Length: 438
Image 1 (cartoon, rainbow, N blue to C red):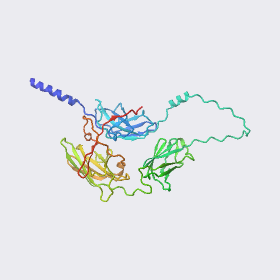
Image 2: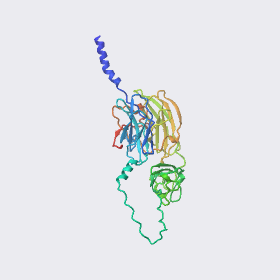
Image 3: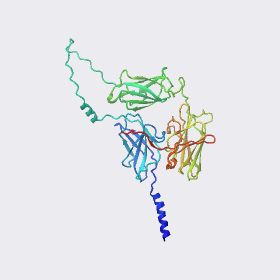
Image 4: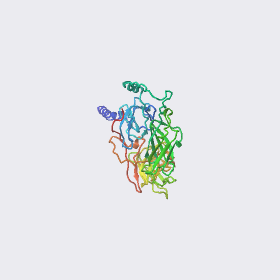
């Protein structure tokens, strides 16, 4: 009897603390953000079904959190589990924010990995009526106007009316080979098509505008590929006006900018054909000793097509309905190996980019790792992923207590393979850089 009692005591001491320790929450996905007219930012995400989750933390950064190994500037914590939060106290002078979300449980543990982020261009906050009133009350009243001077001219003649305030186009600048920003003297409003703005090169050739995006006192123009070093003239017409019906100035409605240095060579035009997709795209699964799986992807460039500048890959855990963040691989590889994949269906899309950063339509394959059977293969719409501009980040070592990223159900480390195969991959940790919230 004493031996049985002693055995039970030892079992309780060893097992119960382990059982009582709750696992950290899963990673948060479905993150989106919207800049509101009052200057605040509304952040939303998909709520976790975990009953131990008691709050969420919204991380904010001036740079991409995922592309900078989890580094962020500051965060705010919600007071409940409602999957949305409004950011108000932040530096409105910054042009762009990157946001990510993690869940927090009752033990204070948070999600282990950043797997999604979103970016937003905040709208400058209007000054409050209280601050305006206090500033106006602190100022001394203006001195009374001087008495009118006698003039020899007829008293019946009236002074000409003061010119009305107008909207001025201040400057134009190329931010990338396909993005131009126009800066105005106040908030510019346009509800017309891109024909309200015309961009021409010195020869009179029109640079096509695909989209106009309002951004405070600026308008962002998405254009066709610019010619590097060419000086463009941009003109706006009366369809663009300021808030309150402020008319466009009759003089300040034109500006010049130089084509981005990454654009095409002057005198040339981009080829009409988009890059060809890879062929012979296959997925194979191999079970690891830990019960998880390694997925090996292999492909070949399209026969007769120019050598790819790079490949862009994205993973999916729901049969291709949603995708994770894109990762860029060198154009010299012929595949990728993804370790530590869970038994659920795993999908991978592959795109080809050329020297002009154009993107192919993309191909997709999905596999059931536990059976090794191909679930589906299809062409992915071009809109699933944007053209990448950065290379894959170098490997980053995680703290020992972290589990592999792919075990969380999102995110994965890529292992590139050339003809035989190589190794490359990374995972993210979150670290704090500097305060950004007021």
